[in-house]
Image 1: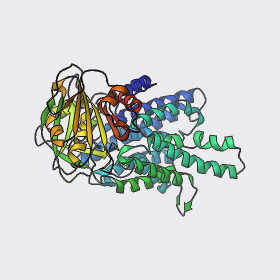
Image 2 (image 1 turned 45 degrees about the vertical axis):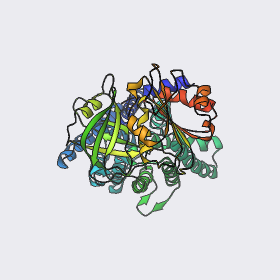
Image 3 (image 1 turned 30 degrees about the vertical axis):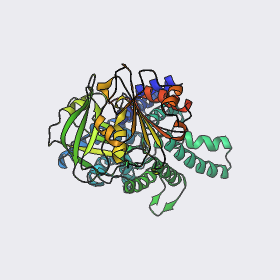
Length: 500
């Protein structure tokens, strides 16, 4: 099971979240055309093709025009995703008024990224904003026709892939249970059977499409996991409970917009603009990049930041990348440790090509890979290779009283990063070097043997009483988590990444 999970993590890690969503929505759009040709949908192929062309074309063109007016770089992936979402929200038709409404929704969705924004960060999900505002005009109303039983065959695996890749399974579960539970009770009260009352919200209402592609959008979510779970429950209630206040009635898009507004007050309000200051080698295969933010960045030690790195000839992963922050929250500069060995993605090439004074923007800050608030709780930090990066922030922010043991796994001595920072932290550092080389004098030598439960227990006898944090590649993390559990660890936290 662990091997299968590791392979799945590695494969999905080849896609950024945005590229994965774009692929899944594109496949679903093609699937909807096949269903129509087979008679499972009744829109008409010409209507669907024109509707798809309008959604993609108008959204893409309006986004580029607005980006030009606001003197910013357009994000093509984002506009295509928004266009595909609107394709599934509005009914395909040749009725002139309805088509005008769809076009208006596309323009309003693009405009919301700029007009309904704070310090360069859009507040609302663009597709939901466009659909809601268009509904107020009376030109067209979102029907969310993606909630069709025939779509489930590909919709369910597509949603699961996105939620698994973005680690939003728990949040999605909370929303689904809350919203489906409320609808279930309502339908049972109308005399439906239990089976019908459960089937309808999952197959004929947009619960799954909503949570998979819209509620999970990272730019409109709060940064912490508990905040996301609370938000999912609240949005689930607003999504499912019927209400009507004059010209405003309950709708999925309104529920999402209210959730977006609440999430805005939880996190980093506004985009963060960073000025590149320089870099230095950490190991032969990694570098530390330094940036000066234009204003203080709100983050906690162990969190990540997503950078937007515009560049020509972007590869299949797009231009946005997530990097673990290595600096302390109180530091004047924000630093990132980045692996630079092997074939380089286009984004890494863009990062390496930066010159001092160049500016980039951060689109989000988040993550829950945080040490316990109680400084009296001992911790064990297990890093595999470049997985040391979030721990550098932990150690820089920790006070001298915390009991910290670091187990650092690397190929050899020259692959140990930031030895000066590790030594200055005062933590007990244990190095396991695969080539059998000798680590620096301040580190305890674990030898080259594989770390399993028995060996971990020998190296850290009190492992069962420590909070264990593991960071590295998916395969390394799964193996080390199994070792920690075997050694008696009860509280294990993981942070894995498959490359970027």
